[in-house]
Image (cartoon, rainbow, N blue to C red; front, side):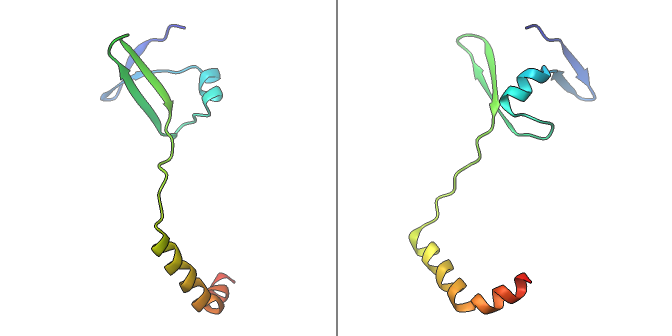
Length: 79
C-alpha cells in the first residue's frame, strides 16, 4: 500500500490506514516503537511494549510488612 508524506505544522507526517492501526491495536495517543532497517531502507512501526519493572525481594517484603502493619488505616482510607 502506498501512502503520501505531508507536512502538518512543523512535522512531516505519514498517515496510516485504519485497518492496519486496528490490527495492531494502535489508537490516537498510543506509543509506538519506530525502528530503522538501514539494510533494506525500511521503517518498522510497532506498538511500544511497556517496560517491565523488576521489584527486589527486599522491597516486596517491606511493602508486605507495611500493609500488614497499617491494614486498618489503609482500609479506612479506602472507604
